[in-house]
Length: 274
Image (cartoon, rainbow, N blue to C red):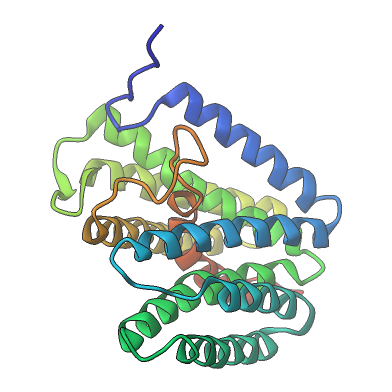
């Protein structure tokens, strides 16, 4: 029997839903039990996503050194959780130095291009992921992370549903031929509603603060999705990996979360009384 064909939005929907539910169970099961375990799950996901990006860049003869980047990501996440944003920033800067030293030892050929690729990996994956650790650190960090992740997921789900049902006007056909303005409208509605409800009931703040969070995150999630699509088109690949059937690679799931993490941290830090 042949495998189920992808749907209109380019996914094998039953498989994608099953994988999504499994990931959701893993996230919630660790987030609301032992925070360091959840942080370990985040670190594992980020390292896999980092490996996928490094491997994809390698197809264009851009050699970002994975080992110092991976070590740096672990320190960024750990220090972000235990010591705050200043320590996290120092960890990022020290990682950048380590990457330069590591790459210099390999010779001068292609040095600048490789360092540019390594800086992209460090900032795009490692540093942005550190803000998820900052979100987790407060006493109500589990609920803040829930707001963050659920709102970004709402962007994906709302955009997918509205795009399949009503999508006619393409948003960026050259970059992402399946993303429509109708889908974006669905993402806006879903994010604003999801964040308004969660901020009110989980964090006990005014609903309108949650709506602002939702409107901000739908923008960052959409830009993150389009940004990764541009990288993939430039490289000439469809997905960053194949680890998650129906989803692609882990970077194909992290693309919306990563740029949304610092915005979620900033707004929730401003809006939520500790």
